[in-house]
Length: 126
Length: 145
Image 1 (tube, one colour):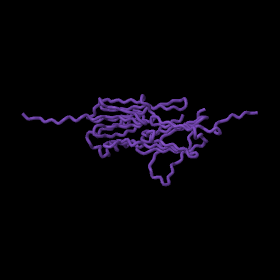
Image 2: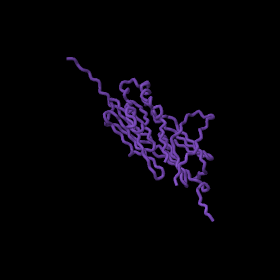
Image 3: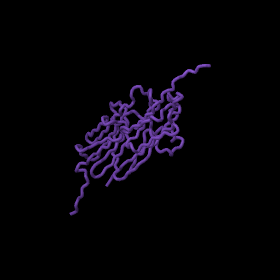
């Protein structure tokens, strides 16, 4: 079974945060075993990714590398230089220790295995 | 499958051309025709438009395109009649289903670019095309007979 779920997105904390961030494009897929979150982070090197799971809030931060070396001037700009932040509230307990993430071609894929209690069970009829 | 295709950069794209002319450097003759959007002339024909940044230094122009999730082999770059066209095929896997869509963008290349030496690299979802400037022809004096 393959279900698509869209967890509620919490708005970034506004108190005391002055840094400008933007929300990256993402999608979430899930099955009986795990959730998979794909986040588009173009321009972010591996060293610029920060992942954090606090209680049930998953936070993804992507620091864009400043790709404009000295002596270079911009003639035309459409790409935003802002860094990314995505906060997702998980409504299912996940196995933090088995969480994995990989960054490939500017896309971060986070796999969140579900805890045993959250997996579907067959209940036999007696 | 739910495919989210919103591109944050496509909003306000209507005024793209205006914005370009409002740019402080837009008045430079060699640059005034740098950006040419095929998609604006023929909407829908060129596929979804890729956002682009253009920078220059002493020796090169650099055009950077955002192509997250696109593999090297799915990028095509073509130079035809002074028009540089980038086409990227984006494939997304959702379980067993796979979907793909294409993104394109054309940029007109200014005069004085060494077309033979154009190079491109793909890193962290950013495609950078380097367009080397040709060495300026040396001034020569013409003697009167």
